[in-house]
Image (tube, rainbow, N blue to C red):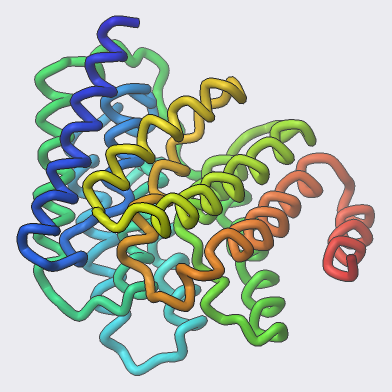
Length: 305
């Protein structure tokens, strides 16, 4: 317990240093929201399937960052860019035998924020290298005994099917920017690999994702200083997760995400998160609970309602 508290503190300091550096440089593109998720998952919680191979803590986010950055430079429709980068990232994770879900977000971020600065990739490499050396120094990865299975094809197929349904829905609604909420898509990859997904867990995750998105929006409106804002939000999220008795590293990205995403998306982030998590995680719940025929009926009902 004492070691975990120290690791939380180290992660907390690293996150603040990242934000402080971006403020000093006057460039929010130096902020990597998923760095907060990795700090918690890698250092504090020591998620086995994230730290089993320390070198992949750098390798996978770097590869997906290059993919996202490159695809964003192509003259393609926003929705197609998102689907294409996720499709390629799933294949890369499968080939690399990795389940480092946060690397999804580093691939999505260049497209969501329309990044055209090559140093974004250097930031990803630099930030993740710090975490890799932390894991190597602690030796925590040596305690993992059970082999980590690679992504199953069924999980990959289901992920892409849910994403395609979501793309169609948001496009029909005329809100294309709602398609890619990085914390939601990262969590979706995590839960779709689970054998069971109880309704209470589904509802709790939707409530927490949406609540912290709205909380990040509200606190940011009250506090204009980015460093103080992040310094306040990180402990608040930890307290909320402790209250709900749940570990959900993905939500630590929300306060930082507010600082880097386009303003129109920032203003609706809470609502977008509610719809995105409710639909995508709801689809996973249906997949785990019902037969094929029942799944189709439930999905139609969910869309209509």
